[in-house]
Image 1: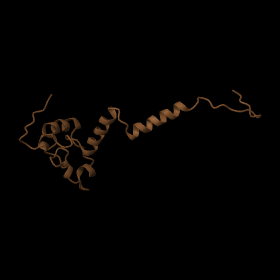
Image 2 (image 1 turned 60 degrees about the vertical axis):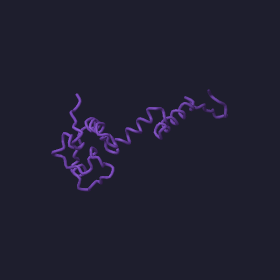
Image 3 (image 1 turned 120 degrees about the vertical axis):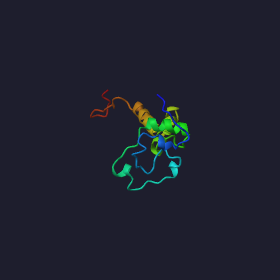
Image 4 (image 1 turned 90 degrees about the vertical axis):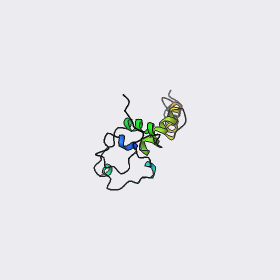
Length: 121
């Protein structure tokens, strides 16, 4: 069910936790990338969690926010996932691929030599 979003209000005011929230760097703020984290920020001290990512993404789409309502960490992870799902080589994919190739090249059993240097296979 889609939320009713009034674009004349600020994006963060549509968050269900808006009235009780004390987080300094809100991902729904228009200037999110310019905001700074304070060491006393409740999200750092009390491990207060933001509202669900799905709700924030929905609000972010309506207001065309730079990070789409996601934190910078969530946004970068989603971009990396988009790139890797399109078949591009990411460092992790490349590492996994090299391990797979290396394992495919190894023989299942190493030939062993007897005491006289002859193969026992």
